[in-house]
Length: 348
Image 1 (cartoon, rainbow, N blue to C red):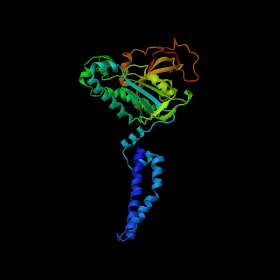
Image 2 (cartoon, rainbow, N blue to C red):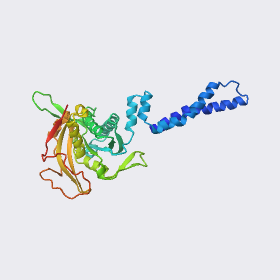
Image 3 (spheres, helix red, strand yellow):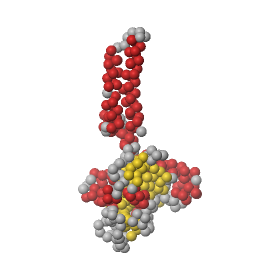
Image 4 (cartoon, helix red, strand yellow):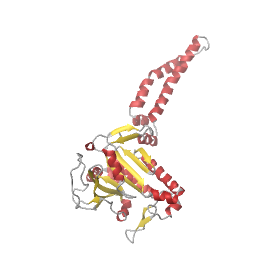
């Protein structure tokens, strides 16, 4: 979209002056005009001559570099990046609202307003985290990111920002599953802390990997958005369905990256303090694979760990029995030692 818009600007700026003064020169030859400054003729011809280079630069060269050189604001640059689909090995994020069908059935228009707030928040936060919206279905979002850092940071940000949204009073007060506000108090010396407020969104993160086979990128004929077809995309959708509202479920590659970042004292870990908890191994019969999974939350929402029951159909390292699977060497637990439900805080 931005390529086309910039291309039109370049075309108009370079070509229209040339065409205009070409007509002026013709008019002068027939005596309709007496004065045509040579400088303007030279300028219009020069602009036309460089139009090909300018179009090539806009359509092929680094747009971020060009926009920065043109002193375009960071917000505009981020918006352009958010519309660029990852092409190599994207990190998939899938989300949906817990108990959305029941909430829609009971609340109607109130739930409509609540979902509008939810949708606007998820789309707004895509920009600073350079995320790409693949598609939506009802209250579910399928997103892609260029790297693990942006994907995890986005999910952490969403979970924290959901607590701050102006949810409709009728939604907050209905006390239905998936809508109740919950506070926790870790000690008598601390104020109660809100850990749930508004809609509860479950999220799943999976980083695609060459070991999972080819991942085909194609533009959807209806939405004109990039779509992905392959095992990695299927795993991403499967992971999002494991958790409950307010959880961020991640696969083993994400956990390995988080632990490596912590071990290397990376700057990302200092600005994104988290708590990481192993959940076990999730078996996907249809895909014939086993996934080592964990959950990650902002340290500010650590109180959720005691409130969210463990996922169903997840085997612990003590009960897990490996089996012959497809040739995808990603079937490992996030934790190297068999310690079920262990949690580690990674904070600045």
